[in-house]
Amino acid sequence: MNTQELWVQRSDLRKTKVVTRELAPLADGEVLVAIDKFALTANNVSYAVSGDFIGYWKYYPAEGEWGKVPVWGFADVVESRCADIAIGERIWGFFPMGTHITLKPSKVLAGQFTDVTEHRRPLPGLYNDYMRTQNDPPAVKAMEDARCVLFPLFATSYVLYDYLVANAFFGASQVIVGSASSKTGFGLAYLIHHDKAANRQVVGLTSPQNISFVEKLSVCDQVVAYGDIAKLDRTKATAFVDMAGSAAVITAIHTYFGENVKESCIVGATHWEADRKRGELPGAKPAFFFAPSHIGKRNAEWGPGVLIGKAMAASAKIAASIADEFEITHGRGAVAVEKVFLALVNNDVPPSKGLMLSMKA
Image 1 (cartoon, rainbow, N blue to C red):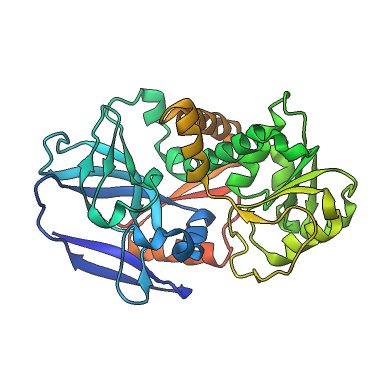
Image 2: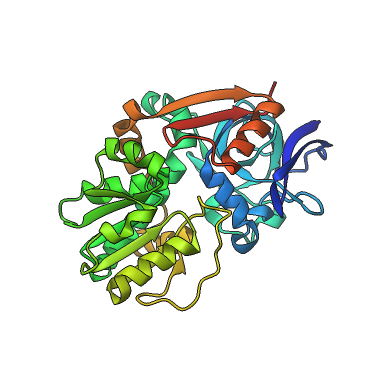
């Protein structure tokens, strides 16, 4: 059995190639899945940018200077040597941009299993879990595309929101969301805006061309362009949650608000080519937010899976709320996948569009 995959050069995301390789025969306990469809968003570019730092390149290793950017999607079991997983099962989870992959299920439950392929065992477990969808209610099955395009991002929004709530928003009276047009960004804004108990102002920072889109979502009390930070009230205690990853934006926020920056949380890299070097800054020290760490904390406090359950429920609610402002389109074949990935790298995809792809022609 062969698989066709899209590989990306780790040091230059604009260089890609389509690779066909032979899969090894299944060993005892393994399953072969055919990847049916997957989402591509700016978040996948962030995975590539932080691939060495967090380990995203390690989930599906390639060769030499090449890597496989992981994606969220659906796959069907086409061959099984695992007694607990039947041929024909449909699963949702973390895959490469390809047509097939071999998994080794363990900890098999009615609704999920964990892949314990040897090289994945040391990696953050969140991305090793796969949902078994055969018993999903019809309403959930009808949201397959949204589950790929939006749910992983809105789930991160919820984890961020819970992190802020757990820390009483670090004493801040307002939350500034950098790259508010990103799905994780406006998901976070939605959750804070609709939590009346939080009683925090939400400011959306975005590019000038995306101001109209963010304003239409009606989840920010104020929307400003990156160049208009001076329009904000610098006397307010502020929590800054940044999806952009630009040193210039981070520096501008810290310089303007000074010691009123009570929390500075770096989540993504939508401005992936921006300079990331920055000197000492006033206010809270900027720190990378790693969602699995907070999930692990809540798992210990609330029990395994409780936070993720809350996050998935919130994701469905946020997805329904933006249905009129968001369009999901589809593409098939390696050429289409390659074209869409490069469009995301070049920031040529508007925030109002979601993209579902398949490597199958």
